[in-house]
Structures are given as C-alpha cells and as structure tokens.
Length: 223
Length: 212
Image (cartoon, rainbow over all chains, first blue to last red; front, side):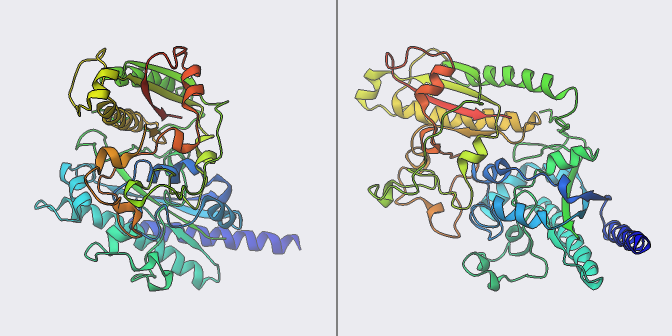
C-alpha cells in the first residue's frame, strides 16, 4: 500500500514536471508547481475590476460582473491539490505604450502596432493554458485553467459583442477562452510576489520605463 | 512615474511602505483640491444592508452604481470588509454657489468652497487619482468611492447609462465609481472616525479610497 502511494505520488510529480516543461516550451519564462491552497482568492480583486470599471467590464462573459463568483471559484479551487503557475515575459515598452489604453477604450488599433503586440502576449498566455490543459486531459486529469486579461479583447476584438454573455454555449472560441485569474478573484500580484517573481502593477497611466519589466500570468489547476 | 514592485505582505518592508503611502496619498488628495483628508482604520466600519433594487428611481437616473451598485454575483460588503486602512477626504460646499446653480469645474486652490456640482466632479477626480497612485505604489487593491450618482457627473446629457445594457461597456471606463452611501456605508460615522466633528455645521461632500 505504501509502495502504491509512493508510486502514485511519483507519477503525479512527474506529470507536474512535464506540464511545467510544456509551459516553458510553449513560451513561458518560468513555470512552477504550487499548492492549490496557495491560490489567493480575494473578493477585492473582482470588485477592483468593476470599481472603477475597466474597458471590458461587462463586455466579456468571463469578466465581472459576469464570470465566476468568488464562492464558485473557492468551490472549484478547493477540489484541487496542485496547480501549474506560469509567467510570460512581456516587453514593458509595449504593455505601457501610451496609445494602448486609448486603443482599448476606443476599440481601434494604433499605427505603431503596440496593441497588436500586447494582444500577442495575451494570446500566448491563453495558448499555454490550453496546452497544459490538453496534456493534463490526455493523462486523465480534469484540469481547469485561468489566463490573463479578458478573452473578448484577445479573441473577439473585431466582433462587436461577446456571444457568450447571454449563452455560454455560443462562445466563439471555447477551446481557448478562459477567465483571467484576476477576473476569478485571484490575487495574481500577491501570488507572484509570494513565489519570488518580480512583478509590477502596470496600468493605463504607466509609461515605458516606469517599471523594468512586465509579466502576464496564468494558472492551471491540475488535480 | 516610479512604479513600485509588489512585495509579499509578510515582507518586513510592507507595513512601513504602507504607512508612508497612506501619508503621501493624503497629501495628494489635498493637493488635488480636498479641503481635509484623514487616514482611518476600517476594522469597525459599520455597513448597512444594501438593497438589491430601488424601483422608484427612473431608468434615466440610474447607473451601474446608482442607486444600487450592480454587482450581482458577489458581496460588496464582504469585499470592503477585507480592508484595514482607508483615506477619507472631504470638500466643503459653498451654499451660495449651490443655490445659484453654478456649474463649475475649475482648479480653484484648496481652501475655496465648491458649488455642489463642482464638488461632486472633484470628488470623483480625487478618488480616481488617489486610487491610481495607490495602485502604482504597489497597493493595487485600492478602491475609491465618491459621492452621488456617477451619471450626473459623466453622463448627464445621455439618456441612459450605457453599462446598464448587458454586453455594453461604461462610456467612461476607469472614472465612475459608487458613492460611499450606495455601498452601505454611513458617511457620518466615517466622518466622525476621521475626526470631523463639525458634521452638519457646514455642508460638505466626502470621498474615500480603501487602500489595503
């Protein structure tokens, strides 16, 4: 019995290592295994999305006031023991480009292409989440992934509306679309700081050079 | 602008950094036009029940934050109860100007009274600036509350609050916010906590930013 337990634990650790490798090979700068208990769920994070309302508040089915409630997220996370937490390095010059905030507000692209570049970083996070989930499912686990930003801006920028707001089954990109960690009430900044990652709060008023680096983070609860 | 690295709460520098930030945020509120500002502890803030609706308010007066903040899936009270510190600020209102109905949004130096409309606009602006400054100082969970209905300030000429339509965004993202009262808090008791005992003697409007 003890041997079986040891073997299962060894296999699970091997799975987690493989999933971290997939994250890194997929483009993550770093990937770690964390305990599900270390996922910090704070109702203030979801409230922060609404007060003051961000550009996509209410527009995306995965973002507040839509998406999972804090209670739902706590319930989901409580069913897991381990997660893969990863970060994607983004060029802070593009994340903090002065036109990005204006473009997101007005749903247009800038001539310099900063919004496209920013979008590419976010797409990478969603893709890595999808890759990790896919492999975990192949190994008979039931993972649940969380990405960064809002999926409407990333995948449905050209569409006037999110189809899934009124009917989840109508999402245009169900294989890729996921709630952001922050939209699910996860305190991404604290989680990153707690594992020793250097992270800075970049926002609409930040400009190139205000912070030395930018990161986007994702999480997949594995088992 | 220098953006602070986020550090763990258990870090020895966290509390000193927070204390310094609270002082700086108060100074910022005053620089931006608040007549008074104070830092308060949030531990024993009293919350009233927030009604789920106010059916008597016509749709052209409603917004996502007025008369009741629309946050159906989670509890605003539960979120606000997590905070330990807040910055509270107030603007005095000039009764004469309010009666005259002047609409001013000017940059009068601190010390001058505002008309009520100008004070409302200024409260929203200060709340936004203090909230943003807090965010970039590494206290990214800061949430600012203002006074009155954001529609009166930002969308007064629009027929309806756009964000009330499912799937539509707010016309002025990052700017509007609910009032202290709409979130179930009692402005008078908060003013008392701030040490402003002259409640009722002079009209004033209050805003606050929950920091950490």
